[in-house]
Image (cartoon, rainbow, N blue to C red; front, side, top):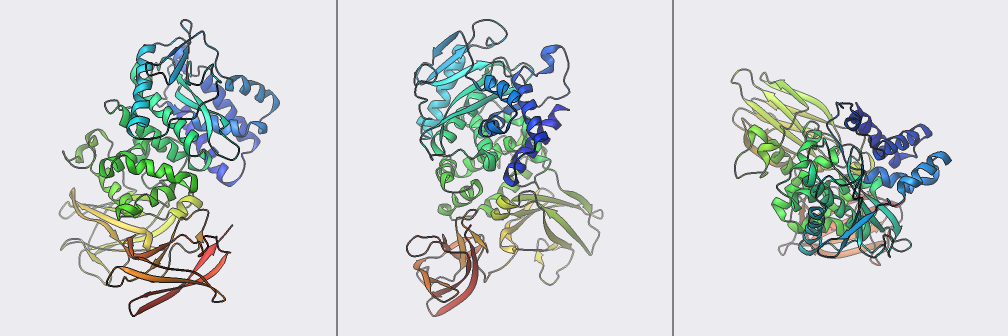
Length: 553
């Protein structure tokens, strides 16, 4: 199936670019895929009934990788790619009613639009009004007349099996990491999950935000592509809430929620639009924009995590809550609670379903970092169904070790045991794993929530993450008990006991712990050398100390 081939190839691309360059065979496969989707590859157009019903929502990632690695392709491949990357030639153009967009298209022939071009122009203005005028994102930068004037250019062409793409062109200024761009969208959407003008509407809402992302914030698709796609897909829903094209991709998350949240490639990144929908329904649109404002300084998972600081919560707590929301979908949906469209979402799939035969059951399982793992227990005696959600929120591993697995142990008992947590009079649980500060659990018995956001450890006495890596971590969290005013003094010393940092600051509640946040910079706002450092925290008459490791690449 083409769908499997596309998923496999995209996964290879994204994982490989984070570790090493693609080899010749992989480059050839990428070239063949792009040529295929750009040369009317939809088999139905040639009288062949395809068994693949899932289309490529956005070719932005494929386009970007090829463009920024153009010199690595063979000369014959470059000549073909150059033609495909040239701006399309069309015979007609119009300007959208509000004047920001110029739409290029052919009046007749196989590439002529099969939907109203005037409706497309209105759709583009709607995307602009919502994303720029209402949400407050800056408009994409001018292309300096590349399309004939300074309006943002849209090309309606035959894109085969693809909804659309955003084509990066010129860096706005040297070292900015931001690019001008133009948009291409499919001319007919025949045989797609959503067809006609509605497909065009969600496509322009999607692609227009890509132009904002790479034009005003940062182009870093090779390592954080999932965040670009989940944001753009969520914009489809925000701009056009009555069009549900993203429904097509939801099974790719609901069938495997234990995959890493930050995993690039494949269709899961489209499905994770529901993460932004979750954020919007809980915190409004502003938190999503705040994450993009943080993106130029840090990786996507860091930006997501840091956006919760001002809300007195943590990424781990919200990922766990998100897991509970994804549980109550389809036949489990509850009107007025959780996702507004929950009835139409798939059912979340557990990693395993097992019988619980008292007195106990212990499982040794593996999950990806930054993930939600569901375990389902069925009690054959009374027919209880207990669903346990295990959340791993270690963003360091989610950035550095996305394709690794993290082990944990989970035990269920029918009576109290040493170290166990009571769920009901009949069920008790215990949990163990490395780095316990990053793990949370929730439990649902017979579709009734028993617990949510339970941290699996009590107060910790160590700084985390350790080692602290400037590349992957925004803060290190140092345990601290506040004084009566809620503050504590923190001092950081080098191994030779030279004071490098000191402050008097408010104690925060992060990851279920009372901590002081430190960005790893010394008193002169400079990064520290790699090594072991000693922290000393004083609050009132209480003094605590410990060690942490800093890694400065």
